Amino acid sequence: MKSFYLTDAGKVRDHNEDSVIILHNSNGDYLMAIADGMGGHSAGEVASSIAINYLGKHFNETFIHMNKIEAASWLRDTVTEINSLIFSHEKTHPESKGMGTTLVTAIVTKDYILFGNIGDSSGFVLKEGHLHKVTYDHTLVNLLVSAGELTKEEAKDHPKKNVLMKALGANDPIDIDIFDCDMEIDEILLSSDGLTNMLEEEQIEKVLLGEGDIEDKVIRLIRKANNRGGTDNISVAYLTLEDGEEE
Image (cartoon, rainbow, N blue to C red; front, top):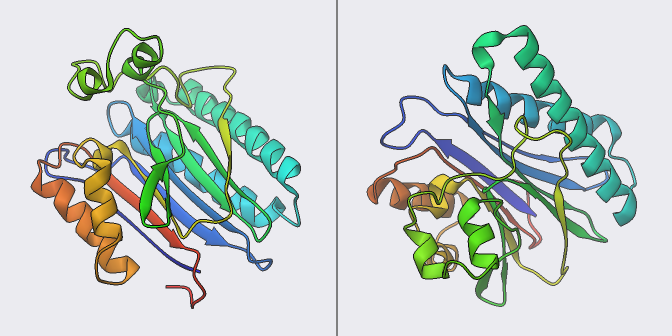
């Protein structure tokens, strides 16, 4: 497998509140994750860092020879603990009140692939030359689309398209959506909404199918998002399931 990730502040924000990680353990299991923080006075950056730092540390220390059911339980318990840590930080740091973060993650083993999601960061797979979104955005407009009150086209430019219905640090208790993924895929891409708000899925797919190594493709995606306005922080984590050395 080969992997690469990158995060960029974008063209408008004065600092980056996203956090990203890709890890693999001695058993060959991979963890990918992106957290997109929110909140004033850099509090979003704190929330996303709490999420990614705990997730990575907990993966390294405890994710050992788990089957699919155990992994799903591990992910739910880990998210509950992250949520508690964010609320605890708020209590002792009043300036952080209102902070929160999205989280999208993928666990890749030789036996299964699981995606997890809270908020509007996205998880995709590339299979047979086509990009497929695996995760479901927890946004107000997505809820309205599901209820038949908005079309997908109307949702794209809706003034409240970024209003979240679920986020770590905003809901207690919290639960993460978990998706059991087909093993017959070629690549996995995670992104914050700073990418998906700027680029259509067809544009992302075109870059992934183009020339260049994975590092080139991630850089190209971020550059394209910035060229289209870069109105938010942009984070991308990319993993290919082909044989090869780690990047």
